Length: 205
Image 1: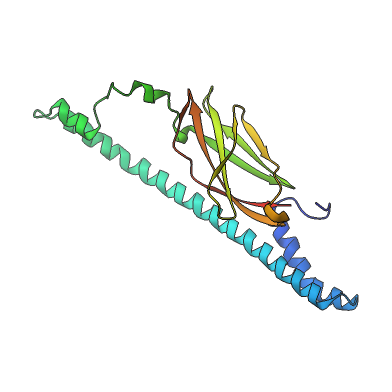
Image 2: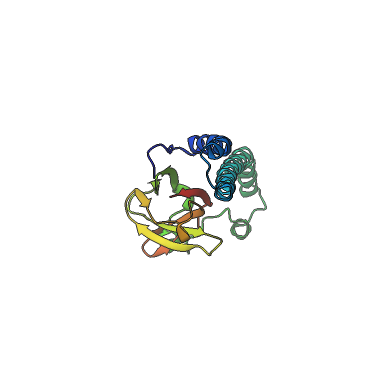
């Protein structure tokens, strides 16, 4: 990647838009091939649009997650209070609690070894020709990294025991920008958690 090309996505968008705006005049002054300039202009527009798409998806994801968490924090105390009242009712039977899921269930002890995906925190950092993931997870638990690109199915990229991973794979068909989607699971004692939410990323080469 050329040294003059910025590192952050926001700076990349500004640079691309400025280059796209100024290129036609400079191209005419230098007698560059108009057809080539037109093709480059279209590709610049595509890259800008894809940066905007990824940003919008990231903002939407953050909003949805925040709304979910706020609603849960507000509502669950009411649910817990109701469960407490049910269990102290004079007509309460333990079988009722088991049906509602408010009685401890001793049977699936092995399930306790399955890590909860809610305990995983992910930070995504994008730099030239690589995507870095930093994980905060329970001790002794591995992370399985899945990736989907170009509308293919999710495939496992790597299983790691550490707290970081760098994806340095080249884009398919040497595309200058590629939309990828990542998700993660936690695994311990050969038991794998549910998948995390999807993290959209724009991979630039």
